[in-house]
Length: 224
Image: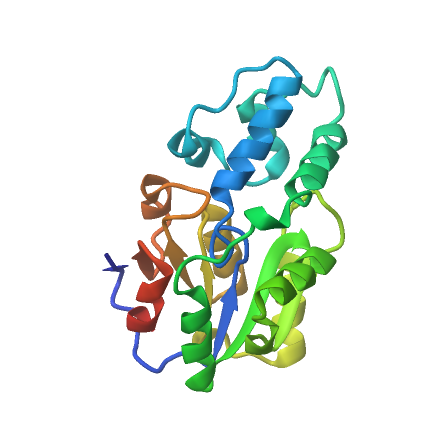
C-alpha cells in the first residue's frame, strides 16, 4: 500500500533516484538478525526475539543499535563485534538476495531515462561485489559507499555526489528503508521515499513524513 504525503509526489518529476542498498534493494534483514544473534549468543546475551523485535531496535548510528541489542562497550570496544559482524555477514553469499521485483524495477526506471545511484553505509568494495553478484551494476551510474565498516553516516558522500553531478535537488529522491535515510534526504534537500519491509518497521517510518511510504519495492513505479 502506498501512502503519499503532502501532495509533493509528481509523475515524471525525477531525473535522479538515489537508492539505499541494505534493506531497500538487498533483502538482508533476516540474515542480519541471524548474524547479530550469533554474536550475542557468543557473549551469553539475550538474543533478539524475531524480525519485528529487530526492526524495532535497529537504527543509526550503528553503535547505539548495538547497545540496544545488549552489547556492553565497557567490557569490549565497539570495533570487536563490528568486525565480527562483517566477517560473519560476508561469510555466506548464498544468504544474499534482492527483494522480489527489484531487478525489474531498476530496469524499468533506467528505461525511463532516470539516472540511478546507490548511496549506502556499506563499504564501497562490498557494494560493488554484491551488485556484481546479482548482475545489476549496469542500472547504476554510480555506486557510493563508505570507507570503513562503522556505518556512521552517508550524508557527506551524498552531498559531494550531488555537487559533483550538479543534481537539482527538486528533481531527485532518495529511496530507503530507515529513518536515517529520511534524515539524509532532508539534509540533502531532496524527496525521500521509504519502504517498510527492510530494517525498520512501518510505525517508525510513518513518523518521518516522507513523500511516500511503500510496502513493497514494486510500488516504486506507481509512486514516481
